[in-house]
Length: 333
Image (cartoon, rainbow, N blue to C red; front, side, top):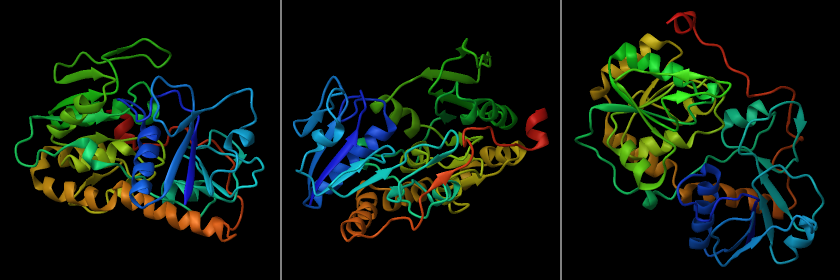
């Protein structure tokens, strides 16, 4: 099969450090090549691209740039134009208001699909060889938060509250100690370390040496690469039961999900009850790029056979970026 992936990103391919969606697309393509498919990319202007990537030209209609080479086109954004070639779209984010999607739109989790009145979803996967080996026996003495710290939906404030209640050290991956933007914050705590926006092996090492991920998000996380990266590298999850989290943290052996800070803090304080080997093996088996590619293969074959991935057009009637409620205890801590 000839597959064209379309993502008009300005990040290099393969991504060097940052870029969650870009890493997913690259991992998917690598798995598809291993399956015997021929893969190309239509990409944005980036510093570095592989030979099988074309750069999108804003002056030329995208239909012309796609041409007649592929058997199927995989857009990694919503697309509702007309193509002579079969295509699917993956929605990697949450709707920010009322909108409709094409019938052949794929979402990232069952909850993600349900929130957009859809049925079809494929869990993300990653190419685990990029992450090295986990630390399964002797982690360091800190926990970690992983996400854009200035985004209230990621709830750094909640993660800090949990770490304080549990009286543990925490490294914040994805932000600085000061933030002077509209969402101002400042955390002077000596038990908090801020490492900024890091990626690649620096990020992997920080996660690998951590004792667990504190992740009490306040929105319906579409999927959460931070979750499976952390599990693969051996760390349990302590988060909120929103979005895809219950689909990923499917057992109490893998962590604790709660809207109550005290419950999360108690679980953090008793982190030794969680099995790092089990966390690693679970992510390795369930969230590999090969598992993801198998899911998309089913989608491709349905579309090529003239079937719809969703019986009705998916849609949203609200913004899924609004802050979700937390318990009164959490508000007043």
